[in-house]
Length: 245
Image (cartoon, rainbow, N blue to C red; front, side):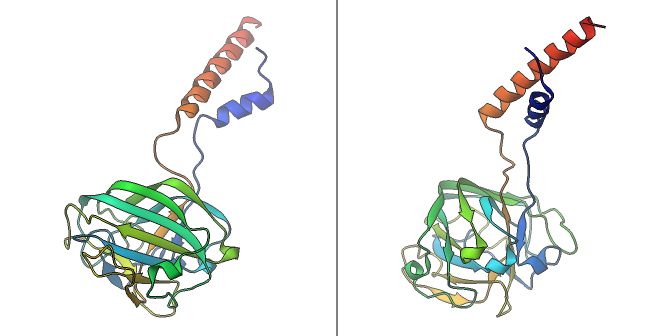
């Protein structure tokens, strides 16, 4: 088989999956810890409903969100691992912005509301250092279904229906969060242990989150097929080149 320059370049490109940089919201907290810690909505007992809105102005352009990351707080933190037996996560585009969410969960959802995760979820942190005075974004949620988000269409709403609550570390680890009114995030949340509530309380607190298009999960099987084919073709091309010398 003749290995053209174009095919050679394509096969080399299959050797390493592409990764893209994440978007941290609020942007101002990329290397600066927030002024609050919060364990909602993950490390809770008995579950809860939770919605958090992220201002569209924090995103530089359209993003296919495949991963959402959080980091440990600065006041209460430790290495941990906890499993939430039953959780549903969805994303949608909304007109409502920070500090303007309704107390009614359903009223906040956008028309494009998409379930991106459903089932058991294990979250963990090694409590390692990040830039500045922050912790690393190592509390990682790989979405089962990516969400196509275009900030030109509105703000981003994260809806978390934590049905079961966490198996451990309730009250022993908190996530990095911000609390000032007028910033890029805010939330509405049910009472802890009340995941069936249809309404909740609103405030200006919000978890600092990182949105990634790429995933650090294992490559799809097709990646290994292409890689094997690429290596075989490259090896064949090299042998033929050497035989002609």
